[in-house]
Length: 240
Ligand SMILES: [Zn+2]
Image (tube, rainbow, N blue to C red):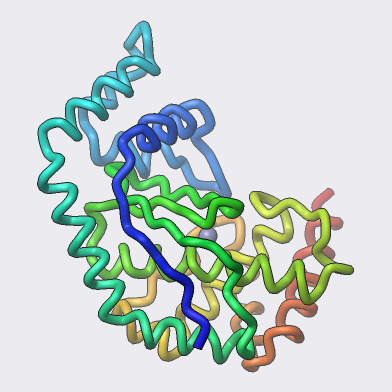
């Protein structure tokens, strides 16, 4: 079975950078990430709009928090890693069966524990952030969700270059397809048994496709990709 190596780390500089990025560009896929990922969990940051030097304020806040709780954050990252490792075979076996043995894109996958609930993913670096203080099953769900993106985008580009080459992976129809794939797959067995309650569709922008995406899933990945992509593209064309 193909299983990539996954490491779990903390990176406060990345947290600072992401907080600044999501403050300046709050909305993605119909979700206000600043509100959901920062303001809701960090009361001090609700004062940010009144600060003169906003970026500095964020940086100092993050540094202070890490200074105070670094031991606790490290412990939580280790706990998350244990949780992931104890279910890892089920996850990789299930993924292997859906992708018909297609290999994981090469690299060292990196999970950053974060004090924010933004959950950005860096496709080229094979890394992503998860929110340290989500409920365990949500943290796990986020890890599976992001891991699936890496193999899904790669599979689409390699197996269907005629359809996907040159298309944006961060927004638009290809992005919608990847999110829908996850929404459908993570609610099938055995994925759903890995984290208890299914977490739902996620982004409002893709909610309207969900019922259809689920209906046409018959276990044949290529058919699903081709059919679903055509539906989303047609719709995007109509909206334009
Ligand atoms: Zn996603």
